[in-house]
Every structure is written in C-alpha cells, then in structure tokens.
Amino acid sequence: MMKQPAAPAPDTANLKAAAITSVTMLFYASNDMTCKMVMARLPVPETLAFRNGLTVLGTAAIAGPSALREIATLSRRDAKALLARTSCDITLTTCFLISLAELPLANAAAVLQIAPLIIVLGGAVFFGERVGPVDWLLSIIGFIGALIIIRPGARCEGFNAFSLWLVAAAFAGALRDLLSRTLSDALAPSTVALSSSTGVLLWSLGWLALTSQAYVRPSAFEVWLLVATAGSLLTANVLAVVMMRSGNAAFGAPFRYTLLLWATLLQAAFFGAWPDSLTCIGGGVILCAGLAALHREGRRRTVRAAPKNSTHVAPAPTRAKLSERLLELEA
Figure 1 (cartoon, rainbow, N blue to C red):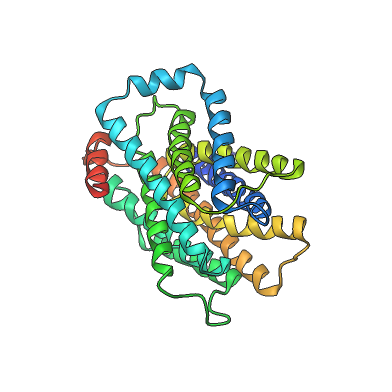
Figure 2 (figure 1 turned 135 degrees about the vertical axis):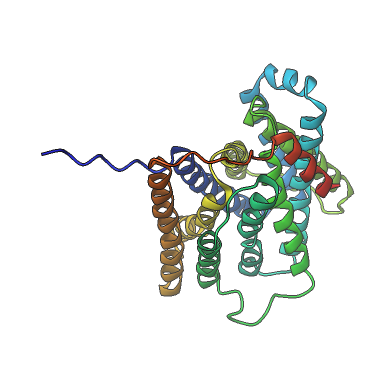
C-alpha cells in the first residue's frame, strides 16, 4: 500500500515569529513589573536614568566594537531609518509616562492594544503583505480578549484627554517596529537596540536634570531590581528587532496580546493577585486567536506546497522603497 505523503509543516519563518513575539512580550512584562516595584520609592526620571544607563552598558558589552563600526559605516538609508526608529522609541516612552501619571494602568494598557492592529495595517500598506479578512478578524479577536482581561470601562473612569497621549504612544510603538523591518539585515539587532537605548538614556538624563524632585539613593535590593529591569529591557529590545524581521506581521500580531497573559502570571507570582474568571476567559480568547493563526498558517503552507500552474507573480516592493515610504511618513 502506498503511503500518503506527510503534510508540510507550517512555515518556519512565521512559527519562529510567533515564538519570538511571545518571548519578547514576556521580557517586556518582566521589565514593567520590576520597574513598577522600583518606582514605588524612586522618582520616575531617576528610575529611567538608572535603568537606561544599565541597559546601554549591557547592550554595548553584547554588541562590542563591531557596533561602532556598523554605526560608522551606516548607509544613508539605514542612518535615517535608525534615527527615526530611535525617535519613535523616545516618543513612545514620553507619551506613555505622561498618560500613565494621570490614567489607571488598566486603561493605559487597553489603549495600547491598538498597536498590533496598526502593525497589521502597516504591513499591508508598506510591505505589500496579504492581509485577508481572517487576519483582521484574528487581530480584533485578540483585542477583544485583551479588553475582557483589563475591563477598562468597568468603573467608567480614566478615559479623558490623556488617552490621546496613549494613542500617540501606540502609533509610535507600531511605527518603531515597522521601521525595524526596513533596516538592512547586516545591521545586528544588538546595534539597533544600542542606538535606541542610548537615545532614551539621553532623553531621561535631560528629564532628570530638569526635574525638581530630590535624589533618592536606591537600596541594595532596589539596585538588584534595576539590574533585573535593565536586563529584561535589553533582551526585549534585541528580540523586538529579530521579531519584526521574522515572518509576516499580520500572522504575528495576535501573539502580541500575550503581554497581558505574562503580566497576569507575573502579578500572581510576585504580588499574590490571582486572575479572576473574566481574566481566564480573556486569556482563553487570546490563546484561541493565536492557535487559529497557527492553524491558518499551516493550511497556507499546505496550499503553497501543492503543484501550481505557472503564473506570473508581481515582484514585491523592494526594502529600499519601503524604507523611503516609512521615512516620509515619519517626517
């Protein structure tokens, strides 16, 4: 009896993107948790200055002298894209902190969940990626799951003019990640992360110099927390570049909502706050969206592997043209 041929495995690049996205969100959640613990006593600008200083040192140690050579020999296109990406990182941090000072954390997280939808649209507009109705539906389902978890309107408070700062932060974060895809593959992720961390460090030092808050000397435990938050941020920044260079942006978008799952688990582990039934339901919705994306990609791979008639395929836009379009938008 002739054996049936095995079904092709899902596209490796997209599976890799899903895994990297989930791990990246874990490190971002770890950074938020440890940073929140430090800011319980230390002023915000001081915390950011310490954290970003340690992040720059760690990233420089990983990148080594090769990072300086890469930056010194950057092409004009890569230099503009890297500068624009760093500006987006600074904008993201600034807008998020301004709004977070006036809004509940749950409300802030709710507004920021529009970022994956922006990335799906950006992938279609600037990278020519095919975004079908199902791709949009999965991203929206993930967004609904996020809203179930954080329930921003449960007490009908917190959404005011400061929410516009969060919308700006979401757009800045999405544009930052899209700009990562326009950078040359020869540019190491650690070099990109070093540029971003240095830009945010310079901004935080300027903020610290202008603030009227008194300096608070961190305790030994807080120093360890600062090292932990810097390490988490360093890892997340490097993985974020790898994440946006892997797979299809529309496919990976639902996995960005795992940030809320990781945050819930870390909060339960370190603060003893266990998730309630609605949080579990929302987490299930997010998980289903991610699994559906995996299944859909497996079916796509099967169709691509099947014999096809010879047809003409229009060439995809070049990376240089895509970079020019994104940089025009940034300007």
